[in-house]
Length: 260
Ligand SMILES: [Zn+2]
Image 1 (cartoon, rainbow, N blue to C red):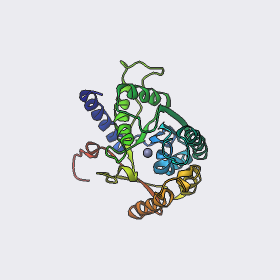
Image 2 (tube, rainbow, N blue to C red; image 1 turned 30 degrees about the vertical axis):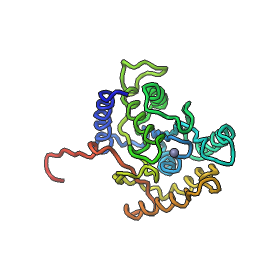
Image 3 (spheres, rainbow, N blue to C red; image 1 turned 45 degrees about the vertical axis):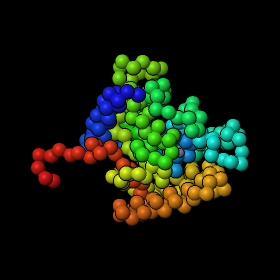
Image 4 (cartoon, rainbow, N blue to C red; image 1 turned 60 degrees about the vertical axis):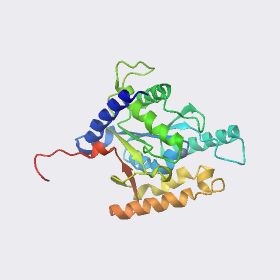
């Protein structure tokens, strides 16, 4: 992806996020939330409660898994674990009431390429999101950082009439938001807090479809960490449980006629 293309993309994303955070677009009946994760499970564990909340509010919600994350189980082959992860992802999506899409990449092989951006752009055109939630720009995992860059480029491509794909261009995106992921913590500062107190049970039912979240594969206590995180974010927001999101720094700029 060229630097020039990426710069234009960021500028457009900034306008979109400003519109989302300060504009009049808040009607509950026309939101479409698309969560894009590098590995099956990333989107649901970080953003599933938010998706459950918006589904309950009457919005469309969708999840795009760029890879299955099939390399994460030392006890079984990537092929077998990939089949398991796909089954688990389908169950999680059903519990959340989310549409689900799967990218063509293998675990550990997601790269910031024009081809990847074009594929994700067409997926965005297919889903027609008003809001995209994805990985923050800095991560311990190269797939997560690649996902950030690919999604940033794809957001622009999806809106351009000059980019031809299987679906028509989509210009309805209002904002790009970044998920609160323990692997993507470098420089992540919570900016928006959304109350998910009434949605935590649905989130838990969805994410525990994954064996790695129930425990027994990874030594990281996913379920305990993210439930505790939702409580911590909730405490800081004056709620019981909350999901926190970051936005691009330039999206925080506000221009007023006078102090509020
Ligand atoms: Zn991941």
